[in-house]
Image (tube, rainbow, N blue to C red; front, side, top):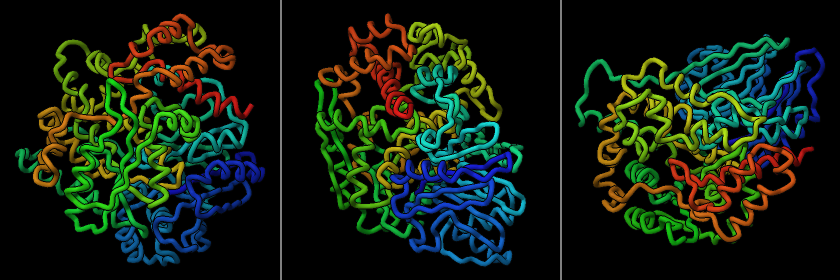
Length: 594
């Protein structure tokens, strides 16, 4: 919905307004409709708005409530804001706008830090309580909306992306060795609070942070996902009925809570097709859908138009279909990397970037199917993990998910980045956390609360918001996810995974869409690397910048370059692309500011 930034000084000096302007300049694409700033001595805010709810100037930000002494910058959408507004009116609060932003201000005044537990939606916000001289930062339960920060002895800055923090200056741009290990083990996932840069951190999903004027800090989790069976057992029919109702509600509120039309990114897979079906079931008229495809390779089709066309024909949507040639993918690749808040290995990042460009010319809000595979067990590695009966939980997980085991990582990086098995320790700890009945419960919870945040969810936010397009993800509605986490893994993994979604789709979607093999957003040129794409990667990895950075061992590079199509990860990523992407990201984001 927007881009936010700010600074709080701890030494009593006034906030640096030039830094705020520099950060806001990096956030214009997230919020092209309006820009505003606010300062109060040691505190300053900046905001770029994408107008979705209450399109009037009354909902411009930073939003100041002079009566309560509160100021807010907010990115996201609160789907239950009408109900909260009514509750707050009953407590005596008066409203001067019609949107969800002001509801957060009043909710903080009424309930303090507990206000975030009442918010149903996606959000990252910063709230200044001028009376208490406190700054409150909060992020939604699944990290759908980003919130990064950097700190020095005399101040803290925050922003919707690291590019803004880098533009303001004073950030330690050295490589975080723990994050580097995470990056190359977990498919570019670096769990909060770390990022690949030592001087940039991010607020963890489902957490808030409270700072005072002297730099005192409290950080706390306000939500945790339990993956345990309910006290009263449910039949299969009861599970399917309750999941259908919860998903129908999640899709409906993400369509209704907007003062602009809402479309669907239709890949042709089950998840996005089901969104179309449920919106039609809810009576949404003039439904707009959007699909993108790329050139085929001998190994893989570059589009799923055959399936998306079936859904379009079935529901008569107003459809837009875009075919992108490979030469355009290569030409536009640097732009997509510029839009990445952090390095992203997923092949579909460029696809989402190019699709979002086209969609943003037609509409400002879309629903997308991210989260369904993680929440309902749709990936091929889940049954493999479930079938493993030997080894520790970490060993069972690592064998089918890690991009590289620790010994291969040590062959990849130079001696300067050699380290213990940080990622193994992290994942072992997450899998051992309480309130998961079985190993697969712990795996699915880990994926939904940690891995998805810094892979597909971040990718979709970055690539859509680069074009001022808001993506809403109903499969990550927290009430739906809480319900699904209680559902037995055996039911979710039946028939190749996502059984509850396949069952409720019967009669709503063509069988060919339901029964098709699991697909991924196709981007063959970045999976089977050859021709100009291979030349690009070879040039990047042999560049002076890459050699002087000294992250990679030459022997490992030579091995990948000798047979680039022969080195794929366990979850089908191209290992050469991983190395080239990180180097490209560092060149365009870090080297460019020096």
